[in-house]
Length: 96
Image (cartoon, rainbow, N blue to C red; front, side, top):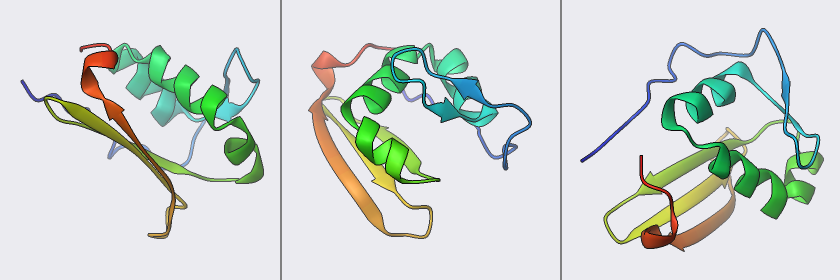
């Protein structure tokens, strides 16, 4: 089963949210994603594992690509330059 969440309506933000573990700020598009996907675990993972990267960069694009047996988290600067890529076994990821 493939699930996608349409985030095309989000550009910029009207409200910032603060992540509980690190205090990092994120946008309403991110908040919408974690609510729709029930993916607060994903937000916690990104903010805790890559806290230094998140704090050094003003803007990041983070993609979660999941297949049956694996997942890849890709982080870019929004201009096509990859910043970080992290493969994961999908059996370790919560199911939607």
